[in-house]
Length: 401
View (cartoon, rainbow, N blue to C red):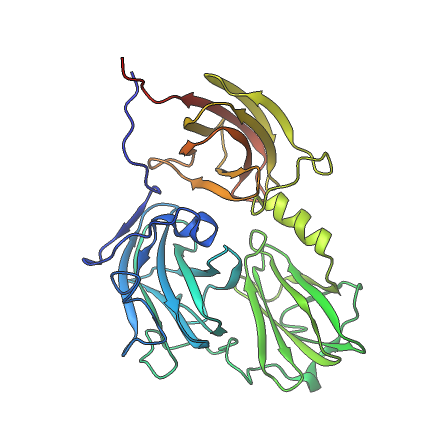
């Protein structure tokens, strides 16, 4: 006999006494499903109208994250910060209501704290707080406008501020489509000249160096920043064409600035971007055969499938012909840290899980309606490859006699 309790994201626990959970399971692409409103409820979490910063204290358990929610009723500059107690090293990711990653940061707050300052349009946003090395931490999340008191001191290179440290006179030239490899110490800046309006993608690759990418215009105004897009590698996608002119690319290394980092600037390719999202499990592929999806057919009671997978997601489709509860487990066979994501056939994220019940294995329980569902499984660590056992179980509602 099976007994089910209400499902919560493992490891998420807030010490804020008045924090209310979000009710929208699809908020921020599912990340905000169990997030807490910074102001205690949605109405009190509008940063545009807040008289002071909003802050919560959170306990992040092993290899998990805490998610804080806030809204903006008017466009404006916002500062997002996180600081751990003691030696805690925080990492923050900011996502919009659709789940798109807006900005991420590791150490810009100084001394292991995180800090990002950016301009945001009206809407709902989710701030994910996690520990850099996956260890438990107690930390604070604070969101406010520039005139509000800051939580962190700020690092020596506050790259998210306009007019930051990007010196075109000292920048090495970089050309679209031609990767360049240098250490961050040897080439902290690159200059990119665009002779026509162009959408671009930037990448910085060497996980051992843990690079951070920042893009400025020719006047030193901050345009975008990324840390840890693909494992510890970084990527910036500027889908809206940039105006002709000079641009400055700044690099930092959070681990070792003496290691070689391969930096690439290339023309933005929407198809390649979508393929990358499919590989990361952050968007569901079409079921027209253009992307590999293994069809498992109908889940009537229980099904088991083994997959040897790395950082790129393996995709499966399952059919359910009667509403009920779908339970999916991803169990590492030996070493492994699996991540599970489930989408419906329209591409809406149904559920996400990493690290269930204090382990590195994952489990999803979702109430579903008849239809086709796509399931992505991958390793959290892109450098890891191993066998993951998938278990699918379907439960139907009890019928009155």
